[in-house]
Length: 612
Image (cartoon, rainbow, N blue to C red):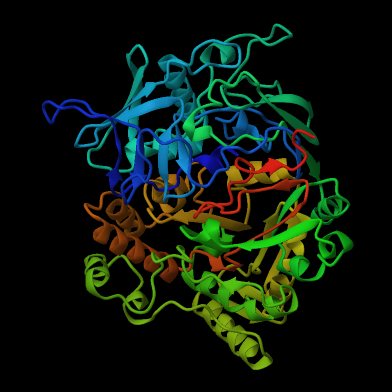
């Protein structure tokens, strides 16, 4: 997906290799071939290929993929509809990320980037050879059009790029982005990561003579400048991409050894178990398993035993990625506004029992919004973290100073009873009491009742034990599973009581924190502030994170933000494995050494049948 390619919190230090260094005055514009995070770029301007690819990988063959749900949209810059899997392969971006570095990017459509010392703007110089699929050149006008339409039609892009005030053509092949604040070190990086669209195509007419409209969903196969094109589609159920022989960028060093499959096809399934059976039958080449129990019990069939299917457990994607997976109560709803209610809901969640009975011990409990990284807070605050909290003393829960955050621990009958008693006590403090077998609001008489919205039946197995636990203390929680399109639309409009949510974090949190937890995003439809957090202390800490003058100050601010988010019990933390469990048939393969921070799938993989 396009959004999956966007950088989520880029640079605290922009260190770059010089593309065309100036030998005169220091203030003269300098062009660089890339931008790195935290450290200097690993690769020089004349690199031949990324270090983890096989530059001699054969081209050809087909990669057969699967997806759960459906799709109804090929337009990558709007928040409407369900986007098609693989659509990002059609569109190039200005820069391309290396999975061997912590968010280092190198020029793709742009051959170079330049920014002043105060980082008040960033300019990109387009490659003269960059072409659309119809042979027309990629122009600054295309970049400006793409940026403006993305901000205009997408709440995500609008929020993420809120500090980017304009994009304008500043040369024959040059486009400049201007920012409303200085010294925000991530801004020059993130403006290289949105999809660039052909202005002339979107402003033209389709085969039926109808005017195209970039503000609406479309199933017309769009034109791009990327390596693949849509060859055929069955709306909602299947899509087939073919590699373009005339792709302008196929010989670029940043693309060497990549885009190796001649065809990539996706088949959609309404049920995860049926999707798994398609993989097992050999109709799907690759799967990434999201069920610990399935991984432990259902991969004992002949193809696995005979070595025709390879299974791998990889930590690569999580080496620089933090995760919060949680039940997310919608704080816009009155029943969830009291933090004691939200804390009580955590005491009713028995992770240990679920992990033992459903996941065969294969999961870990999440206890940080930056779980799995060195940015996660722990223990009591001290040093700079304590200083920051002291400055926010009247805005944060007092227990953040006295009580380290810890999730309740269940797993045996006595612990479960103690946790449920604690939950009932918290409900009572918040104005709720058990009457008979119902938890009732003492003021309104309204029972505690809510819906947990899901988009897949495969999630129900995990949620049902929580529903049963809540029922023991009189809370009426109900599961409602809807199709992908309805789920996306309801989440975008905040039309839910509780969802099963997840946020990914990088080692350099930045502007996206306001999109996740900031007050401005709480009321903006389509934002990723799923919980509806609107908290002054959180806003202050987000500003500290994004404007930190150095790495030490940034880390302190991030850890303090983590503490405050946890102390407010905005979510009920769930679990994660911290591993990518993949299985694939011997029809495909990958380089012997995968990138440090990723799997490189499908970009650097190839077909074992290529050329046969």
